[in-house]
Amino acid sequence: MANSYLKSESKKLATWYFTVAATLFGAQLLFGLVAAAQYVIPGFLFEILDFSVARMLHINALVVWMVFAMFGSVYWLLPDETGIETVGINLGKLLFWIFTAAVTVVVLVYIFIQVGAADETSIWFIHEGREYIEAPRWADLGITVVALGFVANLFMTGMKGNRSGIVTVLMADMIAFAGLYLTGMFYTDNITVDQFWWWWVIHLWVEATWEVFVGAIAAYGLITMIGAHRKVVEMWLWIEVTMLFGSGILGMGHHYFWIGTPEYWWEIGALFSALEPLPLVAMFIHVLYDWGKMQGEEDAKGQEISVITNKPAFTWFVLNAFGNFLGAGIWGFFHTLPQVNLYTHGTQFTSAHGHLAFFGAYATILVGMMYIAVQGKNGIKVLNNTKSTIWATSMIVGGVVGMTVALTIAGYSDVIISRAQMGATWAGYFDAQATTWLVQGMVWRLLMGVVTFVGFIFLAKDLLTIGKSANHVR
Amino acid sequence: MVDEALMSRDILVDDFLTIFVSSTLVLIFGGFYVGIYTAVKVKLLKQWTMPFAYLFWVLTAYCLYLMGSLMHVNELTAKALVVAAIGLLLLPHAVYYMQDHVHQENEH
Image (cartoon, rainbow over all chains, first blue to last red; front, side, top):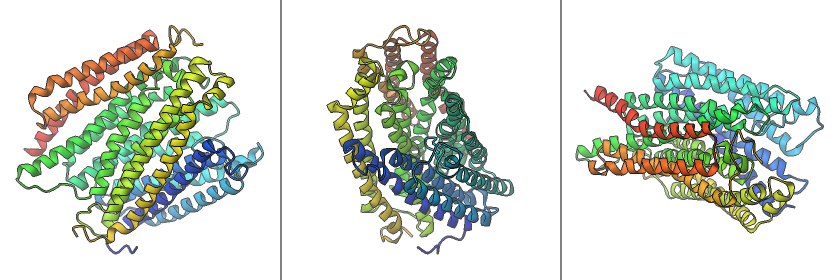
């Protein structure tokens, strides 16, 4: 599509990022389907694309598409928030191509080389073997350069232009986001020490910096989509930042329960994990409060019109409020205390939580940002839903919720048999895997995964064509 | 199976379902409490519904207690759960207080 309505180079760059993000989202779902099928048909693609490889591609694509979409979101909102073109935009474009090329090479290596000898060469050129961030070291260095360049652009633009509350939060958040990646890059031969630092990337990304990022994007979305008062929205944002960092940083303790760290992490993890749902409740109210307030002001004028200027994006933003609360909040809380985590750790419960939390807390709002970009790119004043929007949203949400329910049921069986009854033994593990509940749960997870993937196809079609639909206000 | 520093005794097999359901209800009831409180304050609900908000907070606190008891949590975790319950009680009051002030400053 031509960028005819986009005057800002930063926004054009954002659309590039969103395009790659959406492509990687599709790849994530596809490899997830392969891994899900292998639970049901264990010989499926055996020695061609083994479960370990399919899973690695599934979860790494997840992280990378979200990072692409996050960079895209920042490049999209910067001109609006600062009032100027992004400083260093040509550097930003160069870094985009480096990042995309690096990810392409890494994915091809994952697919065609897959594994190597247990030596330094594999760490440098195949993968590092660290879940979620398995990129080989050369790519790690490339990602670091890209992230630092991105942060530099953000800082230079923020310092030169109008530095709103949203931009200030993003500046602080993104430097933490980029800096934390470094903690997952060095090698130690002690698995406890290695995991200790690795969690600094994974946990402090998803439960601190990414959540703060979501808060900032939600604030931007509420201002642009429903005209919420900036001062009110930014006040909420600061409260959320305080609560998220206050509970999220030491909430990391819940990952330190069983990796060989000192026992005081049980107490730290329990205390801060118990507090972690509070900001999620606050974020949930935030969106609904502002929506109710702005619609109420419009209704008071006697005008029965919606205040929402981008209905697909706003739907995804509301889904984010619910999804964050459900996936990260409820599904996280019920196995976060060490006393019960002792039994649930590493079972399908974790998988259920992971699926709903990543989708609810991050995928939703990033898809919402893609719709905001589509609106801007096509010069549309009010973007309405199409049939594809409704099919995409219903099928993706229905599919992910279905997968989560299936995994939760499977996880319950896993916990009771393999942990509570048989004491975390190998025999217990295999007995649990053979139970009807777990086996059927895996079948339902696969079916719901197919539903999600079909929903993604509708989403891709919608993002490509919705701008041409005639039912918008231009 | 477990270190006594963490819990006084193992969780009974029959108690797992109650633990999972009660911990889920902690957030659902907590969400109702915060939701009703906020809705009354922004006049989406009538004032007489406010006691229901506090009723939901009581249910939240009870579920936390039930969950903690069945898990046989140690003393410090029990205190953490009490702090979480009180935090949830105060949260909407504090947020609404600040929210309202900012709204008034913004509108006048």
